[in-house]
Length: 118
Length: 112
Image (spheres, chains in turn blue, red):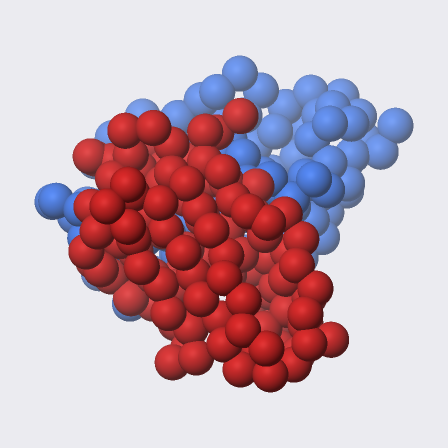
């Protein structure tokens, strides 16, 4: 079974600054995906960024980037130029790569509550 | 808009009752996943259906059951409700490949 750990229950950052959210995971799988999801007060689950384990290059989406360290089983999220709209819960999640359509569920970490201060 | 529709948005009911949550997947998606988000347990996977068949089961209680119908919509049935079942229940869909995954806006269940 996979586990995902987010060691920072809460974080805060000043607007326009950079913040890094930590995530570690444990798995015996070699092929998998990692995700960061954002959950604003509206409670929607919004995909921020996705990383395929077989790719060495770190994923980037505009102001969001990850530092994926496969050997260390670490997957941190960096938010640059933080904006007030980034205030939300952030969940790290793991999905193992399965051929076909069985067992492709997400395992979530406990979340990090991020507050962006003006 | 993810294209995944969950109804109702909110549900308030009493202990011991039974409720049904409904999910219509994004057009063309064959897989439906149910997740529960509670204060105690965090976000956890309950069950997956693919084209009408159960494909994977997570931490789903025996009091809970689900099915996926021929039109691909899915229903999650929760019975003998307890206070601890109060949670946000998400449905997500994908397919024919597992990604991308699309989440609905959730059904907030309050058991009093």
